[in-house]
Image (cartoon, rainbow over all chains, first blue to last red; front, side):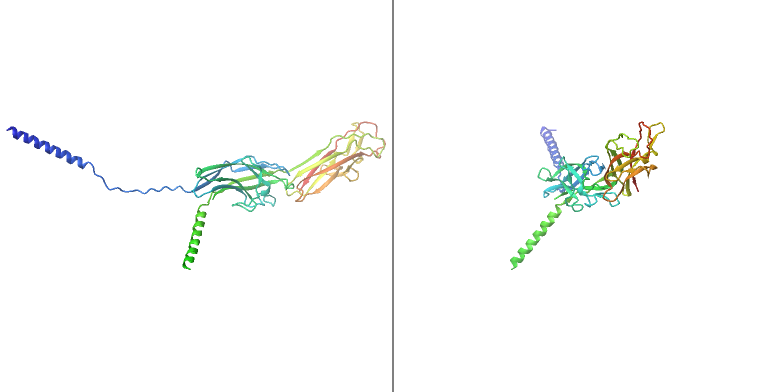
Amino acid sequence: MSLRLQIGRVGAVLVLAFAALASRSEAQVLNSGASTITLQAVLNDSLTVSLSSSAVNFTLTPGSASNPGSLGITATTAWALKPSVGSVKVYAFFANSATALTDGAGHNIPSADFQISNNAGPFTALTSTVLFGGANAGMLLSTTRILGNNRSGSHQDLMNFNINLTTIPSLPAATYTGTLTIRAQAI
Amino acid sequence: MNTGKFSRITAVALGLALATTMAAAQVNSGAQTITLNAKLAESLTLGLSANAVSFTLAAGSATNAGSTSITATTKWTLLPGRTAVGVYAYFSSTTALTDGAGNNIPSSAFFIADNTNPSTALTGTTPWGTGTGLQMENIAITGTNRSSSQTDAMTFNIDLSSLPQLPAATYTGTLNIQAQAIT
């Protein structure tokens, strides 16, 4: 075999090898077309009120202005709101101002004699007409202004209770029961 | 004209849109309830301004006044079914005072003048005895006084006109004041 022939064979082999490598390199990159996924995350308006307890007892003294409840109750209002909401208000109310508590036999303690001290504020009778409940049977506990930094937030109202019997000194001995409702509204 | 109509329609549409937006922005929480239970217990109490009276007796005298008057204050808070409160003074027997040696002053010789009422011997019937007491009050209970009070200012006298031979001695006794509410 001549030297020229040998060099030719080696060259042919090298050309084939490079061609094969180049072909493999092109086969490893194969891109599809781009498919899109539309993402949607909805954070719904939410407004909840939860209570630390749901029952209060009173031991009444006839004609006394001071008949405190057995415990205070904390209402925790939590929210996640749309930007358009301006404030969150929390209310306490009875369904009927004349019969906040009753013995079921026609003897009643009106909402005007039921008082709440909210967050160490003065005791206030439930005599306002609020969004919920009966006329003259409620009170506004708190108003929280909603700004950019508290659209998702919470607020606590610590309520202490009292029944003032000075206006009904002849209330007969009995067990009086009632339901106080706590509710919030974002507007 | 067409421009005016268009303006009005636009204004109405904007108003509706605003109202819808405002309505949608109002969010109410659920209603959380607190059960309230207030107990006003039935009670009937009687307190006295003092609990001792002395008498200096004069033999055969109709007038032997007690050293002090005593006021009984009765307070009550009653169940709706109660109809009356009675206040009574009574001895446990017809022997009101005794010297312990068989010499006695009977309840018929012991008198109480209650408030502005005349002085009366304790010879009436009470829930706790016959012929030994006096009903001082009989208060009708209505819707206006189910929780109330009453005072009875009592002045005392021992009439010895029917016991002219009562021997000299120290006579002691216990007068009871008690109230009762009835249905």
